[in-house]
Amino acid sequence: MLCWEVPQGEKDILMADKPILFSAPMVKALFAGTKTQTRRILKPHPQLISDDYLYWIAEDGKCHEPRWRVGDRIWVREAWRPGAWREGHIAVDYRATPEENRTPWLDVPETKWEDIWIKISNEARDAIDAKRGSVREIGDGFTWDRGDSPCRWRTSIFMPRYASRLTLTVTDVRVQRLQDISAPDAVAEGIAWRSALVDGDMPGACYGQEGEFEYPEAAYAALWDAINGPGAWDANPFVVALTFSVEHRNIDANKEPTP
Image: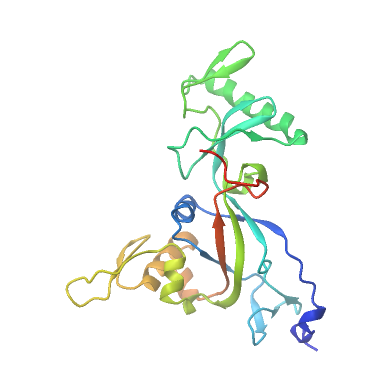
């Protein structure tokens, strides 16, 4: 019996909280409300896929399924740095929105505070020694001009859960070939689409990573190659396509933070 022939009722259907990485342009699209889908390459590569495209057998001979399920909550990881700190709390600068330098104070878990406090204090001292930026030492602390944190930028993979400011709830999960994306789905990926006629007869224009395109799918193809490297679109891998709703809040917060 193939793994997907097990009756659905006998499968373990547990919703979970999981992280996901997004680049700065995609974070902006999430905030703008133009991005409600994302695609990720299926790993390990499928050799045989179920009729409903939700399970597959890979080269290892084992059955696999997408790591995400409908109902899962996803907390977004993005590039960040500590923008300010005080005992047990930090404020965060987000690389996608550098103009926002009055972010709320966030509680740092007690078990994490000493480690991050040592790291950011050392970064502040290093900045002073290098005469970099506006940071200066006052008493047993530091000060600097607003928006000029002495801390280094951290890549999205190192964003802790408490610093995340976007929460996604999965509403649909599909496995498909990358090039099977439809025009509406390409737009839902955050591609900016202008429906006005161009030159009198073109259906519209698509603005993606590398210029102007006639169709949303072409713009998404350019974006995919820009992210994954030349030829990535032509490889046409199997991907998992997630559709989600977006909330502008930390996954553990009960409501949106006050700006």
